[in-house]
Image (cartoon, rainbow, N blue to C red):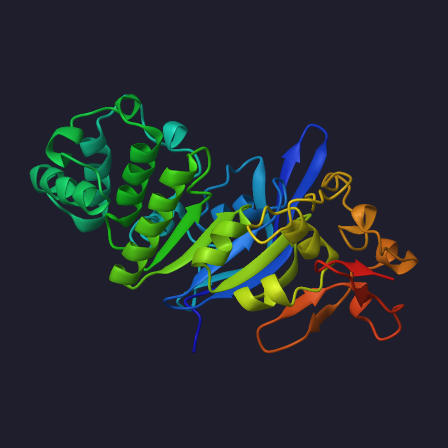
Length: 338
């Protein structure tokens, strides 16, 4: 099956007063039709910068794509002019931003903001766009949508604002939906409702989806495949079973160990990952996780490990996978020990 989206060796940097921040350093992945791909990692790992680069949403300057290829349906889009890229944004690829309060325009009504998408990408008249906006609000579960279209963002709850963002992203019936931490700052009940809504709409519309999150519980519920990012790089990738039950990279294992679980014994404590993420002004020459890894070897400081392919779906970059690495055995609870 040919992927709908192909990203190869993507490098993205930001030029600051302190120097060049190398936010994304050689990221590659594919997205296939109908699947949900989750990108996970701590804040600052490069998740959001990666997906915003796909649509030219990073500010230029200070941001710039230093190298790599992004192909949508076989078409290279990194060198498109702004007008050409505008034909893909919203119409072909929808984006649900992380914070709906700052992403929605506080000076415009909800109906007008959704209507702008319909006028631009579906060539509707303003009147027809407003009527269709009512249907979109109804489809994302907002009660009394005929009245809500006249409201401003500050008049809606956090969950309702997120539903409006989803309605806007889906207004032009895109083929790909990018959801950037869509449940951040929402309470648990509303999070579950938003996730169920996104899953249902994705299936109804036959879309592909990229989900950005740091919540592994969300990943387990909605994703087909998972990419784990750290220090601007992909350190492990695989399907959900690979990452949750057969993960090999110490960082992935650290994320899982720090996640609350219903099957965890009461006396078991969460295990935070010690240390801090790398400084991407001067990133490590070798593995980005080297300073926080209890299994780090001399070579980890000097060279980035090659990709080890463990199966058709599962691969990672870690020197522990090298045949000459010292043996590491599984410990009780899914950890590793020497």
